Length: 187
Length: 187
Length: 255
Image: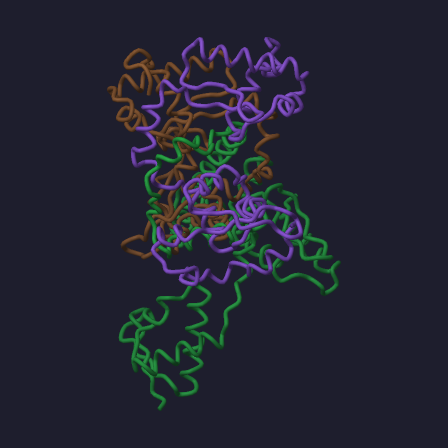
């Protein structure tokens, strides 16, 4: 660790970093593969970390739920988190969410993979946010690829203030046809 | 929420919990409101927390970028994180795009014509790329020339990892007065 | 040696003179002056042009107009600077010299300015590379908090919403050397002509400024002007311009 060229992070640090970006519980086996360490060591470190957060009375907790590990806000801090959530700041969608929603609206039904390909950035978390907010819903699976497809909801139309999808403004001439795009789709 | 006043969390814990649910940089003023503490105290705690994470070589970092505070993964852990957030790697910006971005950053709001005048070469396509990437945005039109003006986005600050535009390094001392030179731009 | 890495049309060898990362004439000049420590007055323009002509001959007629005009643009910028530099400092004889001196100062000022932004761009590239290794937490809310969320506020209307879609769905331009300055976009002449005639028939009279107001590019303005000359030749319109460079008024004179 102290060698100048070896900036290799500790197992604990690598684990914290991964846990910060995953928003679905991740199993210790997966973590062990990604971190290239034995599963037992990973499990022991996860438990140690979880205990450490609790002992230090941190605002976050590391818990094993539904077959995997995930960071949660500490229960003791719930009142503040609730206030923040209700604050109104959260009523607005982020730019990333608006963009993702726009892609779904104009290209539905569409898979997450396709949205990611169009936007050039991973859109999984954003799509989950849109699902939670009730703006987007499951639209079955693609016959070929078995990918889950998404479409906008009536609530979306209501929030945008339009009667139906036909009322969406047409896109400019630079945007390729949906057919053109989906034909070359990987699935 | 269980035992009254027994488990009132520390400011630090409450802050950590809120930071865990934000998905855009959050300002210290908003945090101060939510946490019901003076802004200065909140700011001091944010800074202390940020320093603590770094000193402890945690896998996450608390940083003030793009006008607010947000949790990031530590740079040293990037290799592991990337296995989870495989964005389809972020394409590097071309030299032309970087130059254009620099002119916009230092001269905003600025028209395409001015950027072209500074670079000595047409910058339209490059500006479109920057718009698409969300690094630059429309900033209305110039009252006189009716030219569309551009400015950098908060996302630009976030990508650069700086708090605000004042954190940009000064341009070389030899740069002549920009207005003098670019006023004759074709618009 | 200079070289413009021009965007290469399929199957045709590009003109090779050598400056990496060429993005525009200012870049070329900086490369020459700074990197090769060349005084502009010593740049052997003739050698560069000889090389270019030889290159074109090798192509045996199959040369690319885009490449040729890009070369001309570079050569002209160089020549401009070279001419300005050749004027001796100090004694200024006549107005022409003054003009050249001013041109020289302006060119150098512009070069310095460009260099500063180029350096700022390099600094940004460094930051982006470092920061690209840090990933922000962007995780969906825990279920029990998500239920508390107030109603979504989109905060934008359908038009702005469509703009988001348009931005995301427009194909990203593939990185390439920018040659927009030599390749004029095509203009739909028939459509432009129809538009001009329709407006003039409706309004009877219009200023050229008004007729060109919605042109999307300079090329379209030029096209409209040429089309008006064409209409003039046919006797369909008349022009009025009381003062040189003043407002040009166009009157529809055909039935």
